[in-house]
Image 1: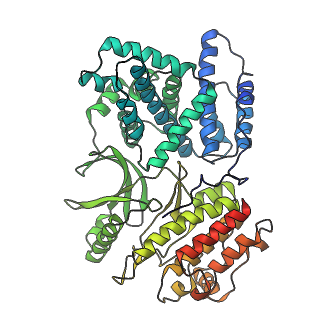
Image 2: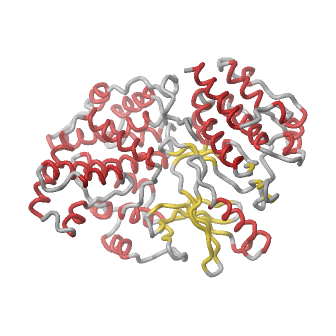
Image 3: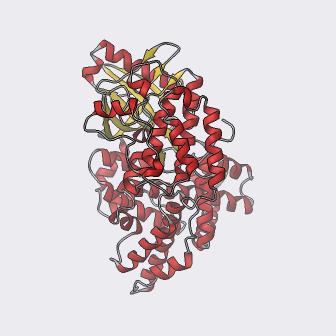
Length: 538
C-alpha cells in the first residue's frame, strides 16, 4: 500500500521525539564509579560504550523515553559496580528479561555487521578487494558472516598475512570510533535491516545458545552474561565465539559445547528444521522456536496436539488454516512459511516474532499516547485492507493479537477464526469463542453476516482500550458484555481521558457505531481519517 504509515514516520509526536540522550551526561554518570587499575578503567570505558549503545537503541526504538533511560543510568552509578544497564531496566520494571535479551541480540548482530562492512572497507582501501564486496555486504544486511576472512580465503582472494593486516586496522578503527559515530553506524545498520524486510538469520552462536537453553543447560541470565562479554569484545573490534566465552566463564563445560557443536541431543523430529526450545503452548498444541535449515531462518514451529490430529474435523481445520495463512503475504500480517506432516506429526512454520503484544505493552506502560496509538492502528488497518481485498474477515482484532516487534514493526496475528467470505468457510480453533466479548462487533455477537466493517468495530474497541487503559464495556460475565456491545451506545474515550484530542475521540466513536452503515465503509476512508488526525496532532 502506497504511503503506508510506520512507527518511525511520525516525527513531531511528544511520545516519539525524545529529549536528546546526552552522551556527555551518561559518561559523567558512569565515570563516577571508582576504578582501581588502568586495565579496569579500560574495561569500564568499553562497558560504557556498550551501555550507551544499548541505551540509544532503547530510546530510538521507542521502548522507553530518554528521561527514563537517564534515570536508569543515574541509578546504575549508585548501584553495584558489576550491575549492567539492562539489569537496571529489569529491576525497575521498565523492560522484561526477554526484551533486554532481544536488544542485546540486535546490538550484537549490528556490531557483527559493522565488523564485516569495516573489514571490506579496509580491504578495499588497501587494494586487496574490489568495492563489489562492500556493495554486496550492504545489500545482504541479514546475511551475517562472522568469519569473512575464511570465506575470502577459500575463494583465494586473501591469505593469512593480508588478513592480519586488514584485521588490525579494522579493530583499531572500531575501537577508536567516537561514540556518537558508533551509535549512528549501529542505528543505520538496524534501520537498513528493518527497511530490507528480511529477518536476520541465525548464526552458529545463536544455534549453540538456543540449543543450550532448550536443553536447560543454561538460563537467560547465563546467556545475558555471555552475550554481554561478546558485545564488549565486539565494541573493542574483536570477536570470540559464544561457546568459548561460556567455557571460559564456566557457564558450560568444554564437553557440553562439543556436544552442542556436534549436534548431539538433537530435539527435532521434523526434517528440515532444528527445534531449539519450547516457547509456548497454543489452543491446539505446542509452539517451539526452531531453525529452518535451508536458509538458517528462525521460525516458530506449531505442532498440532495428537488428540486434534486424530480428529478428522480438527485436522481439516488446522490444515485449511495453515494453507490459507501460506497464501498471505503482507508486512503487517504474521508470515507463514510452511506446513506439513512427518509421520503422525502435523506442523506449521510461521514467522518468529521478537517483541510484545499491544496488550503486554499496555500493561507495562499504561494508556498509550494518541499519536503512537494512531500509528499502530494505521498499520493494522493496512493489514485489514489486505485481508478484505482477499475476501477475508479477521474476526478477532484485539490488543492481544497485535504484535510490536523489537524493530518497531506492527504485525496482526492469530488467524484462528478468520472468515473466508468467498468460500463461506469459518476456520475456528477448539476452545476459542467466535471473537472476544470485549472487542466483538454487534453483528458478530448476533451471528449476522460480516465484512471489514466488523473488524473496524473491533479495532475501535481496541483503540478505546489503548487510549484509556480500560475495556469499552465492563460486565460480570461474557453474556453481559455482549449485551452491552449490542445495545449500549459507544463509550466516549474523552470521559476517561479528557486530554486526548476530540478528533481521535470522534474516530473511536465512528468505528464503534452500532450500525455498520454508520462506520467507515472502506479501508481508504478509514486510513485517510487517521492521516487527517495525525496531521492535526503533529
